[in-house]
Length: 503
Image (cartoon, rainbow, N blue to C red; front, side, top):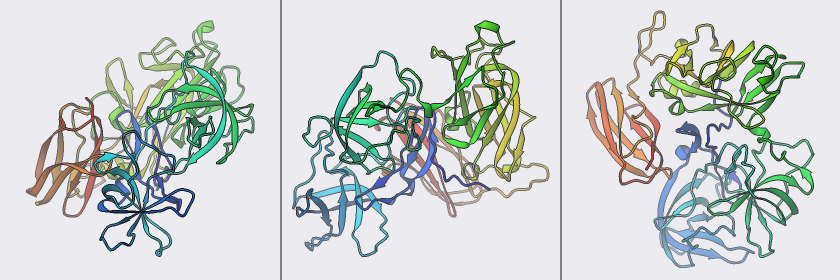
């Protein structure tokens, strides 16, 4: 049995988990995936909305903020607004004595004698900062293979570090005014360059060379050199976004799944080049392999699918090769030798979709017929939670599917769940979508939709329902674009899924 205790990101979006407050106590949210990639939802954070009077302590170098909720002139909460220099457009930190209403997450403290911290997300109805953050495949707002037309620059300054989020954010003050001008992109925290360069500490004076990317709050410099040491190679894709497969190598090369190191593809030596199109074949391939949410897979949404994989291959000219130019059909590549693919899955994904592990199947996407093909030669190990297969044909998309609990399968009797929640359709959508759900026995049902801050934006069902299959229509024309959670609560269980509003 395997539990999902690793950090996962995929597709175009990268999830950052939340670390809040000066006490540096982690408040971890549940991970999940949706639309164009994975993200982190604050489902496990205890969200609160409180009103009170602001108390400010100015005895330190930077003010500390507190909230008096019951008007007894005593602080009931400590308020975390992020680093002292964080200054969102259009919102100011409150003054002492001001009455404010804020929404945020309670921070669990080890010392019960300390005040509970509220991580502020919303101040008087205006967003202060969000409990989740998104980034591109290259890590936090930089593409994994920047266009050669992007501006490069070399700057020197003082490093500021923001630990408000789970992953440390780095900033650079280049003019000495104690406020940052740029955010620095060093890649994921596990990346260590071969040059020996290390991430700077708070207050370090550094010189960075990199590529500039425009941002909303701060422009981001994707770091390529740090104090004269190579951080990543200019003109090459990010080392953490995939791996090069060289035609001249003499041993097996392994391309790891970027957001699950327990999944990989093994390429045997001499797997391409000779006999595979002759001189037209590139001498090296850049292979990308990552998990994606089932909603990001091609074809119609299917409730049986609980995990998705996407594979992409580039040559040195950044051209995608999964288009049939090298011995295969559209959306796949055919190699000279068999490669082995190992896919690791998680019990939580099965449980969240009410699926039976004993019925798992591996599907490959056939872009020619625009349908899924069952791969009958895959070996499924429920003890190790793995699916392994060998093939010469590498598809762009793979999916893991299983039967819903309660479906009759010989030798595997299952009791039906009391409720089941299906994926909405269409998804993404504008302005409305249909949410199917099933009730196995009469009970009170609540179906509601929540935004990224955990605020309920719609209550679709709140009544006793007899057993049966139902559909609810959610109209989001009054809501902004974004990812939302819809939640089905029954008498003995609660189920959640995600939907995407696109306008």
